[in-house]
Length: 219
Image (tube, rainbow, N blue to C red):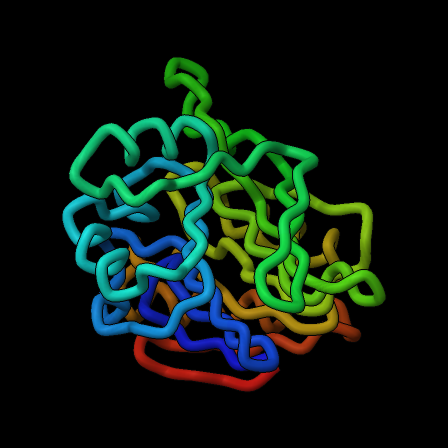
């Protein structure tokens, strides 16, 4: 599996030639030039995960890519300029992308503040029948699946979380490998501090790798 980061929560996962782009949002850049995608998956409607201004061009450049999002986001996209036959990903649903199976899990965004409504958020679990947890992108949630996770896209900074919660989530999922996401809200110095702490406090069996914007790494 090769992961290419476009910053914040947007990355391309190339799994044995199947190319899936996650969360092309406003705090990410470079994804606009991608072609040959097999799927575009969006976890939820917040602009840092779903840039409605740049999605139409991305869809036009990848007309054969499957396009999935949580139900609320799908309704918005299919009614707006990013219309491209987006499909609902419902909790418990499974759908194929190439030789892979995507499992839609989770369902709800983490609580930002009790006075703010909680929105839909789909955590995507990518794998095969033999290896169902090859990759987990939880979006803005701390969802722990009921299968072993090989590679975790770890939320590492957000208005809805403390660093200690990211550490506990990393320990709770206990993936074989992890890389931090959702750090577009931090300065470079802040991200370095967070990543150093996450690396220090991970469980011994988890390999922690930072994939900076524009960088790629094999997992």
